[in-house]
Image (cartoon, rainbow, N blue to C red; front, top):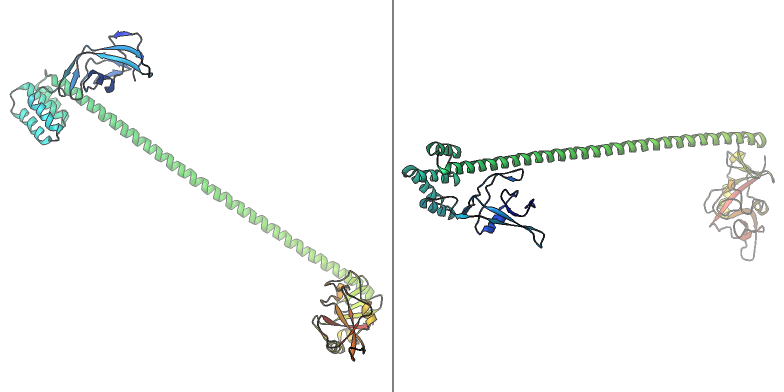
Amino acid sequence: MVQKPQRSGIIRKPYYLLNEKQLNGAGVKIKSMTTIKDMVLYSDYIESKAEAVLLPGYNILDMGYSADGTYQVVLIGKVKTVSEGIDSKELRYAKRLMDRGEKAKAKRIITDIIENSKDNNAVAEAMYCQVLWKFASDQRDTFEKLKAYYPNSKYVSRLKTLLDERERKRKEEERKRIEAERKRKAEDRKRIEAQRKRKAEIERKKEEEECKRIEAERKRKEEERKRIEAERRRKVEEARKRKVERERLESIWGKGALRKEGRYILYSSGRVLDINTDLEWYPGPDKNTTWDEAKRWVANLNVDGGGWRMPTGKELWSLYQKGAGVYGMRMTSLLATTPVTIWSGETGATRLYPKAVLQIRFGEYATSEGVWVSPSYYKHRRGFAARSRR
């Protein structure tokens, strides 16, 4: 990036940071070896990469901004074409060998010059190239020898500049490596800390979920305990009420009275008293029953002292209550049974059935007269026992 100068024209002391691309405009491949400090150019010499040197006394002409927004400058000065500052023919040949990858041959040429040449300048240049091309095992020691043996050689300053630049680059690389290592360690620390925080957050959430689960379980158990306790109290209260009702009923209707439903009293033995008719009832087995089976069952019934008989049709019809009972029976639920037809004890004869018995239907098609049918019928029929109150 080229900064805008303070004034136009020829700049004697330019405040520019030149790069290789800008200097390539001179027509040769050159590289700035200038020392820059606080954006001020201190050095008066620029060395090429390999092919040329821009000599001291150059100037930079300020041209201004171009149409594409870049800032244009022109570099004016003298360029000397060389090969990395190498003067010797033998070393220029060695450089060509280096370019072709024949480093062993180039190294032998340099060693031969250092050991056998009588030309001090050639030896100094060979020692310089030995360090430049990294053939010297100890570059700093080679420099010290060059400085001691040939203190006035121009290659001393060149080699010093080269070694200083390499040292600077080494330190810069080391600094970058250390900085990269520091950043890597910092990233590792951040990663480890992030993992630690993530794990801590996961553990915290797990603990929180576990606490919530435990609290929910505790509340559920507490609710269950309360429900059980309420159910127990309800049952106790119902038992107490039943006991009170039973005692009340027993005080009125005798021992064993359990509950009252309308005009009917249920006793502990299962018999039901109709206080309006003073008839006591006992429902038969809840299964399909023929008339003969019902009669035998009643004859053998000994509940509460016996004396049971099959009821008449009129007595059965006295049980009818419109809209009452369960299973559509339309009678008190204390006598609940699933079928809708009850056998009476009345017998007779009809045109269809020479031996007929009277049945009373309860439910949707109930009639007070009943229906005369064969005693062998059994489906949906039950037997009831009846007796007068004792």
